[in-house]
Amino acid sequence: MNALKPWHIIVLLIVIILLFGANRLPDLAKSLGQSLKIFKAEVKDLTADDKPAPTVPVTPAAPAAPAPAAPAAEAPAAPPTPAQPGTTGPDDASDAGSGTAPRA
Image 1 (cartoon, helix red, strand yellow):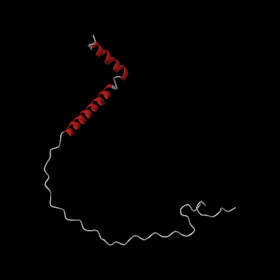
Image 2: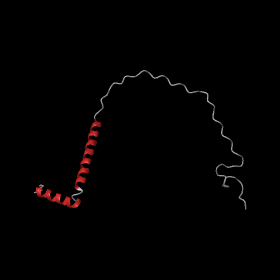
Image 3: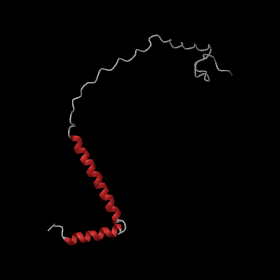
Image 4: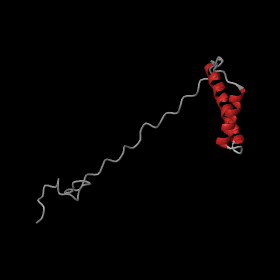
């Protein structure tokens, strides 16, 4: 009763041709084929990732030479310069922290 019969397929193909047009069907088939090809490649890569990689015993090479020591006595950085008296820093434009009354 619910079986797919040949005339169902024919009607379905006619509807698809009417919807998409005969000119666009080859492009749709090509893009579908490319999508399936990419999908199969990704599935293959994922299944290959699940397999453990063969382990090869690593033999240690000759020990590396020690790195040269950094110079111990460098000149210390210059001390910061003291601020000028009467300045409050970057907010000089405001009178909020100067302690002087605003001029009238």
